[in-house]
Image (spheres, rainbow, N blue to C red):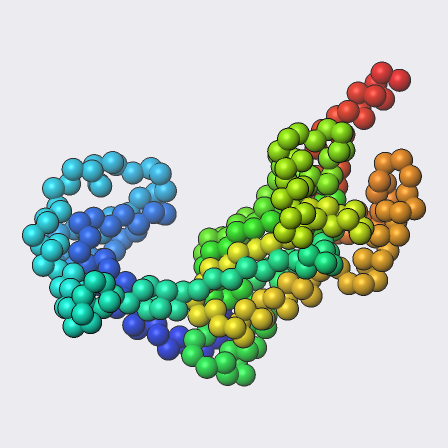
Length: 319
């Protein structure tokens, strides 16, 4: 559904019809989630409520007999379905060899793009500013022209139209541990990747061949920072969505760039790294940023190299 205040999508009816068309030839459609009462929906989709093709499953708890050996699939019927015939007719009219097929990327306006931190000026995210930006995932939002009302909706929910995304985030308090980000529909998942810390956070004398190779590959593509010693610390995000026009991609890019540390915050952090001796970042300003993602424990989880805390505790006990 569109976010509150959004204009109705101009393609909504077309999209519903296309969904119905794709469901029609299915022998069985199982909808995961909670138990649903489809009512007349079965007849609406299949034109015959007696077929009973629509079923539901409470997540993984369902009878396998609902989808295995149902005896409902009929090859002759499938080959004569309206969708197949239409595809063949369109192809023949266009000269054959698949020329009449309209790719889903074109038909439904599906596109993708990649955002990355700048290689020459890598910066981490300010956690609270980033939290305000990560909104709108899974919402289709307003379609058509970018009216003032549509722009207002997108300004507040820049990820409207993005249906899938995946990547890695460098948060200011994540000096050692990157954050994996994954979205599917409206579900957003952020996970500290403690099993694969930044290579630059690992003492070079402890590097494995894979980590040495990782540095070499990053340097080859200009993604290893030597100036401030950030190494491979960086963020990148791949987004797949609907109607991701250049203007909408720019909105996302500007929002993400705006959530990075500003010049003053970067200067304070870099000076702190240079002035601190012994354990880096003991009283570092980046470590003190509030954490909106992991119950306030972001710095405790992501600042130090995983395993370092246990080593220090063992040293204290030995002393």
